Length: 333
Image 1 (spheres, helix red, strand yellow):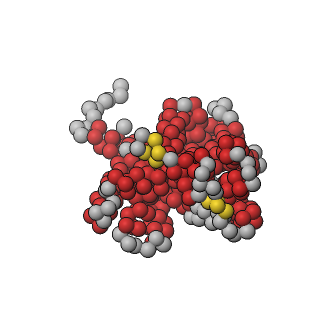
Image 2 (image 1 turned 90 degrees about the vertical axis):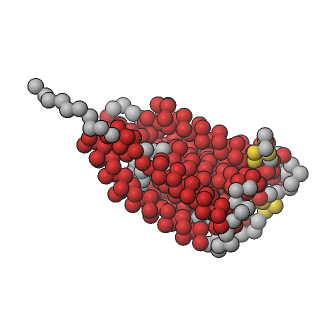
Image 3 (image 1 turned 90 degrees about the horizontal axis):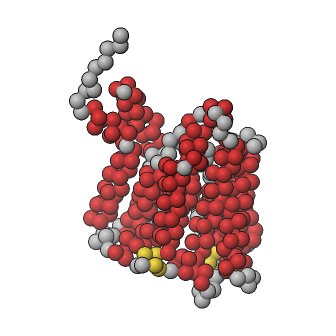
């Protein structure tokens, strides 16, 4: 007969801390950043600046939500910044050509989804590594944007409704923030409560086992890259509308910020574990760091050093600290 022992006192709290360690850590890190920058600059916590942070964080958060699904499958999409630049440039070019902006928006969304579908087809159905496919996309898409604009910025007329996508306000909150909130809510529901989210997690944990269990792994992988393409198109539209111009130089290093936000939020680069709440906090943290360093009169180029350091730290925590906590939790249960 198997002998059962009582649960050690206090271990339930330890299990909760181990389960949510990454989410708690990014929440704590976010609060620390807020405290530090509010100390360095009295302007940081003003309502105007906080709303500005939300506006700046919106494009990153929109794409980070989609990137969470990609990374949870064990993949990566390095082309999102170039996709944003291409859509950004196309928006200005089409509007300058006299195409109604109400038609431009759905066309750009379709182009973004198409870019994701092409890359997803190579990854899911041709078996090419996501890193290679999206690295090629990073170069090719930026090159197309450069070719179309010849390196110049293309202005967008300010008197049309298109610019309200990036500059408008609703209920005292910038329109881009509302778009980001809608994307985050949809992503959270899809990842935590829908069959698609369970399929994504299963593929990241063990793709072959997921396939043998009857999950259409190729179709799911195709869809997650369509999501990043679509999200990149939304971000490109928001940035073009906010800046009032399109440029092939837009969103340089954007993919770094997106991946940093996702990984910092607790989504494993190895796949099989994703956290949408963590992604939201991670994206906001990246935006807070960028905004805070500017208000503290630190060179904006320093933000790239900080972002790179955050990615390295997050990967190290994933591989060492949190894996040990999870292993200890499994041993106790």
